[in-house]
Image (cartoon, rainbow, N blue to C red; front, side, top):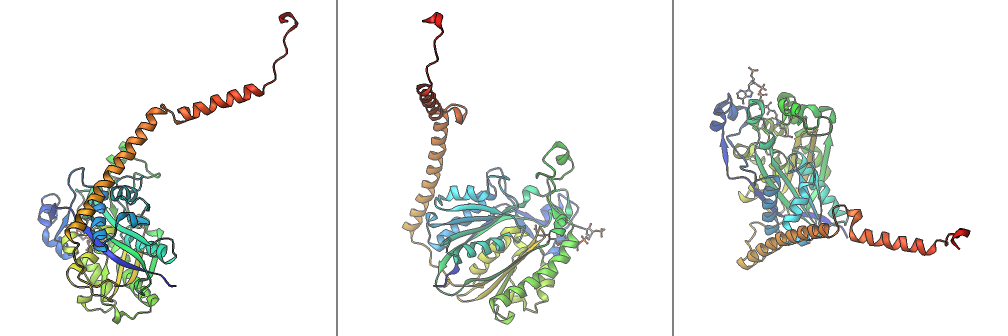
Amino acid sequence: MARYAQIIGWGMCVPDHVLTNDDLSRIVDTSDEWIRTRTGIRERRIVSGETETTSTLAVKAARAALEVANLSPQQLDAVIVATVTPDYPFPATACLVQDRLGAVRASAFDLNAGCSGFVYGLSIGSSLIVSGQADHVLVIGAETLSRITNWNDRDTCVLFGDGAGAVVLAASQTPGGVRATVLGADGSGGDLLILPAGGSRHPASRQTVDDGLHFIHMRGREVFRFATQIMAQAARQVAEQAGWTLDEVSLIIPHQANERVIQSSLGRLKLPPERVFSNLERYGNTSAASIPIALCEAVTEGRIHADDRLILVGFGAGLTWAAAAVQWGVPLPVQPLPWWRRLWRWLIYRGARWRSLALRALRWLAGLLSGPVQHNGWRARLSAWRERRRQASKEPVPPQAPSER
Ligand code: ACO
């Protein structure tokens, strides 16, 4: 029987702190007027303090998506986090999210495809479902770009913001959901949008810090040209693969990078503006989070209805591009959960935290009992002693010297 990957839950989270264009004009030589006319951005959300990170935003978005889906984290088979700003190079941010949610049965991995990452994740998640390897997959796009932004560089610092968006994909026999995806890459443009240091090419050093190589470096005009060409092309291709005409598409949700990119690329598709969703002015470019955040807001604003045909399309660092054709399967609006189910969810998340703490404590205890080096632990020492005794019992008795008799 055919399997389909339906989106059954969605959620988003943005930091409380708002950074307006006027705020930025007090930091660098720019103005609200320049930023609005060149990008369409008015303000963006920025994380504050050390406690807000990519994983904390991702966990909040994921919980909201699981609540809409009315799914327990234990039912998840995979957690995919698309991000270019993980909490750490490793472990994967997806593993931190998996632990915080208590998604004990789920595999977890990060995916780096720049701003196209969420749609890449959607493609992989739906493939896991359609192939029968998973029944429920959580796909998250989460970023804290403010942490790799050079606040002295007016070319880039006006563009980016922080946030997270998530969807829950579920196996279904009802035709719909993610119907087709198009993924692409052109690594020859990798240097157009790059975080030069911190990897194996330029490991972190005093010099890389002094040279500002841990910040986003971008050649804006080239990226702009690439974006305007590729978005329309990818949207057309994915519609064709899904067997749709563009007239049948109810809403396009593009990556929110720049209003001019959206207008000029999707203008090529000759779609009326009301069929293109944009919330860029409030959040700026949140990279892999921008499409799922826009999807959530499109639902909240009543722009999506059951059976609607949507195209999600993005481009980003790599260079990469990705598009997904999604047939919306869930009747809207979704009824909120009764209070006791919310309470139950709260207890599940509390339980996940206690479980995580207990596992850490047990690991610590095991380390303590087995000594500083694992190989010299009590188990290893016991088996070495046994082995020595076995060998000794097998050894022939050495012949005694005549003088010893
Ligand atoms: N305020 C005031 N002036 C500025 C600012 C600013 N914030 N930034 C640049 N300028 C100046 C430049 O110095 C330049 O001055 P000059 O003519 O005296 O040299 C002038 O404005 C024009 O600069 P351009 O770079 O030509 O401006 P443009 O119209 O191309 O807009 C922008 C720049 C907004 C960056 C645009 O190129 C763009 O949006 N590119 C796409 C970027 C993008 O989408 N990146 C994200 C990719 S997704 C991901 O993976 C993260």
